[in-house]
Image 1 (cartoon, rainbow, N blue to C red):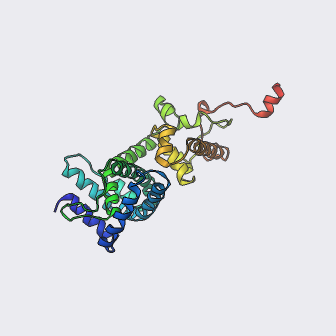
Image 2: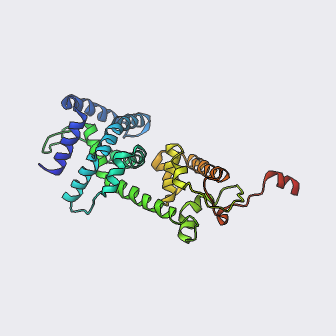
Image 3: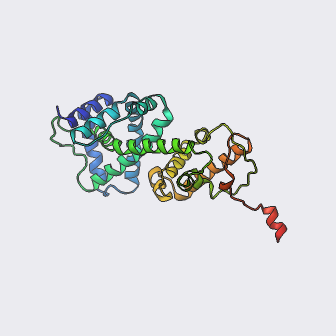
Length: 281
């Protein structure tokens, strides 16, 4: 059995149900959406439904290691070097938060590719003549998620390494940390902190207390993505991205006031209060 056929068979086993009936329904839906060029409100609703149905199944496959295993096998079949570290596998099995983070990237990449392929006439076909014949639309979409998992995993793993490196330079003496890391997040903050003592709680502890989208915004910022790129990946507006990053800055400075972390003095923005401004006037 080919690797692609094995992937579809594994996915079909996860989905269950009557695949023949489902393929007929999928064909009618795709024909309807083709009439509007896979654009507009109708397609947006379809995409939301597709993601909502796929997400719990994908998270289960991620927790059980099935998604990573299929991606590794697919890459090996194509001669690509790719493996998932054992530590990362254990983390993805044990941490719902980490599964959510990587899943945001997987679904964003997969939905973009899925739509682009449909518009080019290269996407899902109800009459596909593969080793196992046609598959359902959901099986095909999850197959797309397997396809993009490699890139999503590499970005996620690099992000974790970058974050660990930031933890190792709490004094922010390395210029790289100041330029690309949390220093960049703090530079625009309008707070003044006088403490110069190192506290025990790290930045990651503060981050995991935030809402999932705020965490995603901060992590992508640390990875070096622009506001526009983050907004596209998370399906937010640029203003919402900046607002969520601002919330995290506020949380960091509040934690410093509570003596939970230390923010180096050279990263503080010496903002003048409104009261001082009024006095100067």
